[in-house]
Image (cartoon, rainbow, N blue to C red; front, side, top):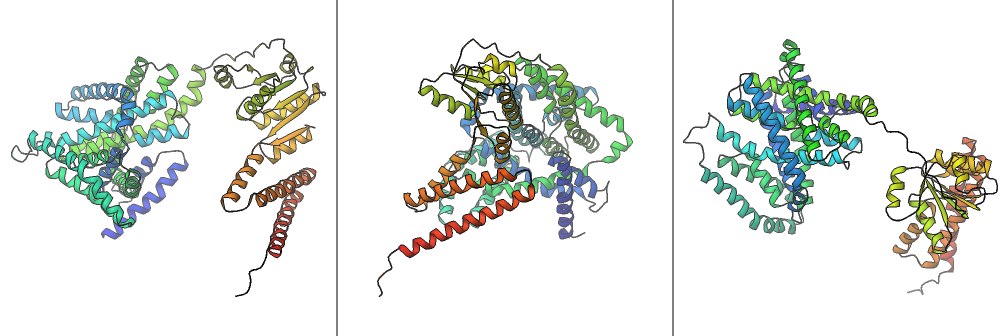
Length: 596
């Protein structure tokens, strides 16, 4: 098969497999691995030599480490130093030691056991961060600590890739570089990069050619990788150092944007090649062995992560989630295992077995996370419902239900006029947060008639409904209108349909939360484009009057979708005609220029 046809097959398999697996909630890495399995020797057999593809796509790993270096700003690393080097260092050290000991007891020689332990101690950065982001847990305690562990693992890959060639029995004593040569090469890169890279990129930037800047970026990465390889060190180490040297430069974002497409494609194809090289015969011949190794790996890593997390202060739920999310093997395990085989530190059958173990552990992780969130966490983390607050016997003229962004502004304005308010909020976290700033807020559900009565609704004059959730707002309005008809209700509407439902309940005044702010911003835009203040005010006034009239017309027919849509179309045509007639009248009244 020609190079062009192989490229077509590789790209087509990735384009089909990755979106398909992501549709089912699985990570992109698994999609690439599945694509490789499908077209490799154990699948359709479309490409018969995965080793050649694997070698050609290893440059994607080099580009990945360059981007990791770019993102590793020293100031950011210093802020995270305790979590990164404390928690992350403890995880890699303890996990790799335990796994190496197990490998040695199972018959591996010392070097092979250490390499296997280090490779299996790493988790999948792309995999874990994607799952945390999808569940909005990146900013949680276990999300932040998980990120710190992953960052240390990424950093640990650099020296590991540099050390493996030095340990290789395939490298003779004559060809193996001395420690002084290695140190000299690294110092040359650091010193030369520090004083030459920025001036060089400043010179390239003056050309104002995007293509030349992209070429210069690729040249930098390839030259650094080639220099490290020539010194007998890892190509990835040179790329990483280049990224670190430019992490605080003004060109960092441009460099990252230039490299990202090449990195993404080559790294994806690298994982496709790993999938092609995966020996599925092992899974078919020894399914219990492979499954047992995968489950054993995940159990050991999860146990150690949980214990380390509890030591550094994580509570039970956060410790469990940290353990479950990071229990799998990672993409860098494929890289280290491939390098270990090429350097004769691991034999091919052992590397293939470990590759299958890592792949299966990654495939099982979403299942375990789902089981934990659906079945285990609700039982272990069940808390008794918090009792609503006892409201003091205070009679205030105004009750505000909902103390988020909207309700807080209303309350602050009223307090400037010495108007006391009783505030109700149904989110206990929001109540606790606001109380820390000295505001008196009561925890309770404003749709409960007993709570409204305790808040003085039978004596109050005004109820302000500033509740975020539409259904909760409607329920509170129904309760207040039914049991306290003397209350004048002022309500916030999230959208037009919320407005209609509040009007149906007889709410006195309904304000659309974004309408006034949107009009104000539109006026600023018009002024910025050169319109006079008079034109801006006239335009906004006309639009406000027209939209409020339209809202009333639509409210009358909002139960009939056909009439509602026709009303909207008619109103837009009327508005355009209105502004068009105003524009013609302005042109007619402007003085004409004298003839030449």
